[in-house]
Every structure is written in C-alpha cells, then in structure tokens.
Image (cartoon, rainbow, N blue to C red):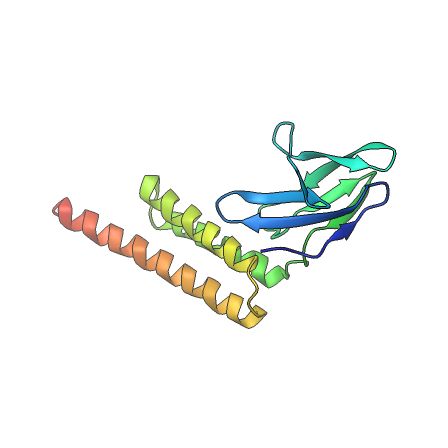
Length: 156
C-alpha cells in the first residue's frame, strides 16, 4: 500500500513510502530504494541535491504511519491516526489480564498486530472501528477457549 509522495527540501527527488505486513516500511527516492540503517534501523541517508541528507524515522506503537524528521522538521508519511483508532488498536493487550504466558502474549500481540494492519488499511473509519472491535472479541473468545481447554485438561 503506497502513500502520497513527499517533497523534502534538499532531497534530490520525491520520497515515496510503501508498507507491507511482512517486510514493513520501504522508502524510495525517485524509484531508488533507500535502506534504513543504524540501531534500531531508524535512520535514512537520502540522496540530496548537494550531498546526502540524513533523516530519522520517527514512529510509535499507536502511530500507524511514521514521520521522517529532517533538520528538525517532521514530514508525515501517511495520514494522522485518529485517537479512537489508536486506543482500539491497543485494546487486545487487555487480554493479557485473562491469560498470561505464551498463549496470552501470542493472542495479545497477534490481535494488536492485526489491528495495526487494519489502521493502515484503506477502509473507511467506521469499517476500521468495527473490524478492530471484532478483533478484540475474537481475541477474548480465543483466550476464554484456552482457559476452558486448560481447565478441562487439568481436571478442574
């Protein structure tokens, strides 16, 4: 899924951002891929009109799209995420209150990853909200099924 191209002063060309669930964000300048470097991989060296331009990738757990910071100025790579969607995207983490351990963490982080994919999607906001609530319901159902299965297996 591609986003609007960015024009950043000093960069020789337009910066494009693409996202894939499996490979994450990919940045290109006029069709040439620019790979992140540093630890954690949050820096880009963009080709500039007079030498290279250093950019920092600024993200966050509840932010659907990162921003590129060049010379202290932030350039958004996608639309702002509404606050309601940020909260709903993180709600599957509450399932850790039901089941801890590997199963609980798998369900919680899996649900959160699915919700972040929904937030980055092209659907209308109402559809996104409904899908994220559905993800939370499924996560709670999976946790409750795991609790009942473990209770039955342990003879409780």
